[in-house]
Length: 218
Image (cartoon, rainbow, N blue to C red; front, side):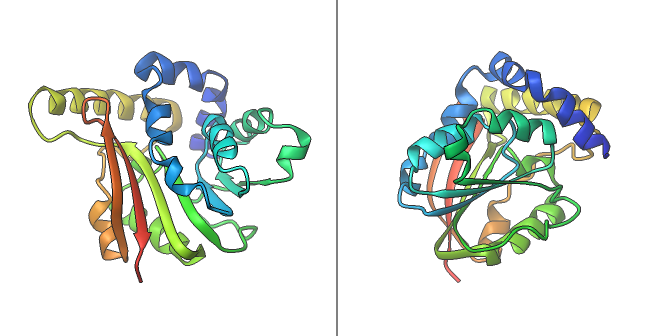
């Protein structure tokens, strides 16, 4: 088992409290900021869901959707499953996969939207490009990518706030999970180069959190 998986398995039971201690409810608000745009989605793919708190909210907000969740940590998947009844779980397919190294052969079908919440910040530029290129072909129809993550504010005290929090977070996850990435990549230009157009954005929490809805126009 990789250092990353062991680390996230270890953090799984306390992850919610770490998040709330550092950010209160701000990260969940960012995750949900533009979900009303996805209410008609029927097939949704989530990359790196974590402990299932967002999935629970998304499931309630988009009740007609079928969900596929790719998550590398078995402990996170266990926590996520516990948030649903047996009948609800028939609408969710959990796949244990480390997509930084390989795409699960169990991933099948086409999706209306791909969701990545606080996930792409773990990767460097080339890896993010590879992830977008790998998963884009699984999109159909309107072809949305729902991106939620941290951002480096541009100036003033907000920029200082961003830098301090990012340094602390990258240090913590390097310590706990062996995370190699130490710099936040803004993937906007990668989305554009790979055929996506930004159609809506929401920035919150001292300009530190961003929620973006991209549409593949190719």
